[in-house]
Length: 128
Image 1 (cartoon, rainbow, N blue to C red):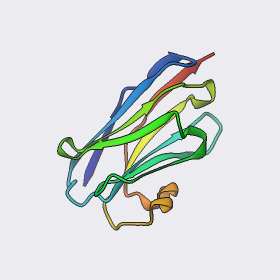
Image 2: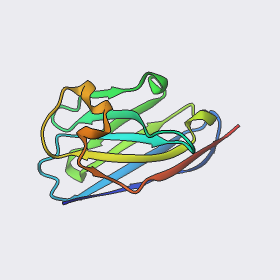
Image 3: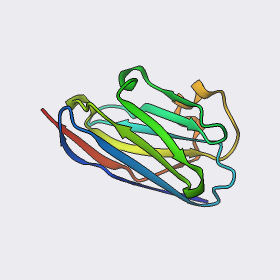
């Protein structure tokens, strides 16, 4: 079992920044990748970014490229999402997820099906 706990969400004005954290605990030694997804009210959960645990290769969706950066601290079993130049359309509940089963091609991590564990989410609200 792996437990994921997100933190760092909040209310910020457009153009501002937030840094989300996701701390993993439990059987984390088989972590292949971790990712961030978000879900806005009335919309489906969408992929934001992913990072391969070994090597640190990253992949993100086009709408956040140049604004969001995913990173990880292997020693702390923590993944981060630095969000800059936030827009009102970034408002959503942000979830982190972990793949502990097998390693996929990086682009495959767009799919929620590649993840085994999910956090409870943290709310990010961007005001205009």
